[in-house]
Length: 91
Image 1 (spheres, rainbow, N blue to C red):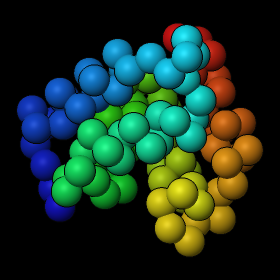
Image 2: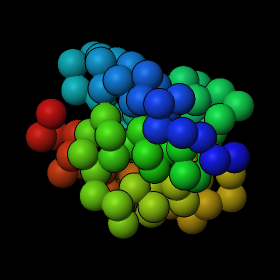
Image 3: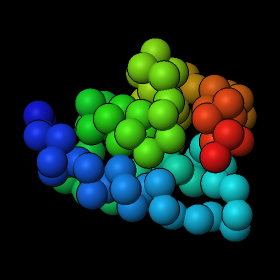
Image 4: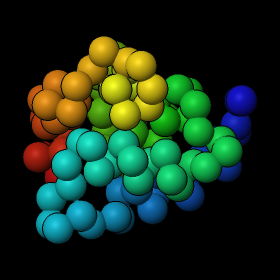
């Protein structure tokens, strides 16, 4: 589903403001994004809000959608944490 940025920006802003015990984990961020996006959740919308909320680089955002929590992806929880750490710790 293709959504205009104006429809995704509120979810990106909420994701940025979501505080999960101080510093969010990548797994918490991914789950929160999926919840916030609801029926608009897909690889494109997830990548957009991740890049918008945390300034995640495009290729890392693409890779993050391969997380096992979204289905049969090969990316483990630990690998997702490692992948997104540079942006989540910079917060």
